[in-house]
Amino acid sequence: MSVYTKIKVEEYAGTREWFGLVALAIPTLLLSIDTSVLYLALPALSVDLKANSAQQLWIMDIYGFMIAGLLITMGSLGDRIGYRRLLITGSTAFGFASVLAAFSQSSIMLIIARAIMGMAGATLMPSTLALIRNMFVNPKQRGTAISVWMSCFMAGMIAGPLVGGLVLEHFRWGTVFLIDVPVVIVVIFAGPVLVREYHHGDARPLDIPGVIFSLAAILPFVYGLTELSRNNFQLIPILSILAGGIFGIAFVYRENATPNSLIDFSLFTTSSFRITLIAMMLTAAIMGGTALFMAQYLQMVTGLSPFYAGLWMIPQAIGMITGSMVVPLIVSKIRPGIIITTGFLISAVGMLVIAFVPAINGLTLLETGFVMAVTGASPILVLGTGLIIGASPPKKAGAAASVAETGNQLGIALGVAFLGNTGAFFYQKVMANTIPASLTGSAWKTAHESIMGATSVAAGLPGQRSVTLIVSAKEAFVKGLHVVAVSGAIIFAILACITATGLYKVGTVNE
Picture (cartoon, one colour):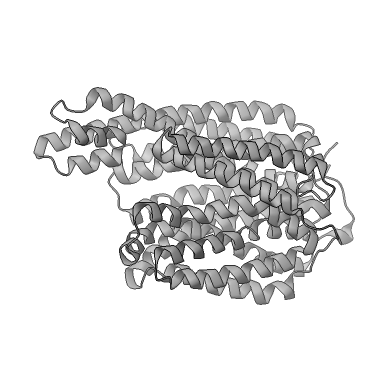
């Protein structure tokens, strides 16, 4: 049975809902800008706050860790207290935490501020998606609304490096956090006027043990995956992943046994829900892992500065936005399963193009392949979110949205960890046979570990020895990129087969 159903004319969204969508789309700018802008500010704030390498990693990572760990909890909380209230409260907390981060006087203070920003940020995704689910009952209008919401997120990914780079040219690093404040003010004042509260009267208390188990499952798991992507296979990250898995099992057992569960596992009985969730998670994994390699290629292989590397990331964002806006226009005539499957096939071809990128003069080919990959991925991101929240009852919209976003966060972590380690493995395998024989000891070990290490070692070598090492490192890195690209193409091809068979019953919005 299709998750799309015909509705009455009076259930179509009106002018207030469309203006309200603007207030709901703006918070996604906060998440996307704050995810990307800190990469540019990190060098300056590290010097100013005297942050060591471990503190730098926590400044970068704690924000994403807290978002991933609290999405399920916040989605369930919104189902209980009201989505608009959760949005306004979370936005207010985000604004105060941004000011705290901007004026941090120590690394510890900034880490705490970033943790609070992550906790507040975890309220934004599930609350905005749940409000969209209830404001736009018509599936066609809902698809368009989600496309606007997704495009706003992608616009933030474009604006982050550009606005951040411009601000850092003239102001102190803390100013990048103050960018959030005007956005928060708009949400706080416009939200209550333009967006109606949706409250389903769920008086059940929040499942506190479930909250603890979910945090104990997700935080160590994401931390372990992130550390694996940096340090290869070491004991602490592996133990963290195992601990997260154990607590994950305990969480599932707890939620099945309690009447006031955070997640309604009956949602997973719908095949379209399961297939879409898996497809979105794997798509996030491939895109997250490939984006990591692309950023390194732009800077370490091509030699672009961070700002100009950010400029070369704009075409992919434009491709994603274009795909996000086109999909709702054709979904009324073409079944979602066909659109998503076609998108995966385009992404597979794009990844194959990346598999032929050379170490020298390969920027155009890399850009072409990645634009194809992200454009092909846009249907699953737009329609997938709609399928997931559309397959859930209105009173569970927040929980369903949080499950979808948690899957995306875990997918990105999986992609960075496993694809990152896959590329690193082949880089090291190639470098073991191509590092100049004159290089020994710690210099050999550093150059063998990563292309960043090889570049730093080459800076201290004379003339031809430096050139030889850099060329070897670039060729080894590209070999790893090729393996990652082929892996991504295979996964996309498999997803095309799965969605072609598993989502074929899902009808158009007019059926």
